[in-house]
Amino acid sequence: MLLAIDVGNTNTVFALYEADEAVADWRIATDTRRTADEYFVWLNHLMTLNSVGAKAIKDVIIATVAPQTLFNLKTLARKYFRSDPLVIGEEECDVGMEVRLTRPSEVGADRIVNARAARSKYGPNLIIVDFGTATTFDVVDAGGAYAGGVIAPGVNLSLAALEQAAAKLPRVAVDRPERVIGNDTVSAMQSGVYYGYIGLIEGVCRRIIAEHGKDMKVIATGGLSPLFAAGTDSIDDVDDSLTMRGLVEIHALNRGNGRREP
Image (cartoon, rainbow, N blue to C red):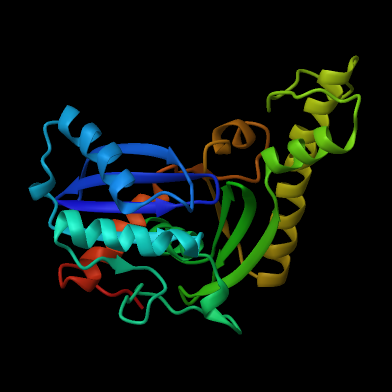
């Protein structure tokens, strides 16, 4: 059984796979201070509820955008699962696609993993919009390589900054208001965030496609992707399983069970 770990800036996801089939997944707040022992106590309890013992895990793969978590996650894999983990971004890990950046080591592991999974399912000429702590736009070019992208503040990050900077503005939920013109503070804030990000999505995607010079498919992922996809024709598909599917594919490639794509 494979344990796939995706560490984001806000949350960390642990998922179990058996022969590429999802068995279970759990989410915990990302905390760089959490030790390997703390991870195991939490994870082992949840695995037990799913009738999975620690000995069932034979392999571990990790993608993290928080480097401070890596030591303890590696310790977790080695100490409790007797596995030398595969880590996205480390030299011995082949992601199966070319990364055409000036400094490839600077790109977030999750962005490469998403691009790999999206290309496998949808082909080249892609834009992947990920609604995470940051809102990112990642490009897979005509040759199937990762060609860079765009990073903007995330939706919740923007809302938090607005609340903190303006004393009279309340905390509001991210939602799609019925009208663009708000008739009170909450609806005005919701409109600004929702339709502001719709404008961001449409504008950035339009400029990327123009610069790329070819038609491109736009795939959205992340927790807020269905909400924003419903408000624009610029998004062609919503795929919330990209990151984990990419980790499974990369694991298979490196363990000799997968096919390297051009």
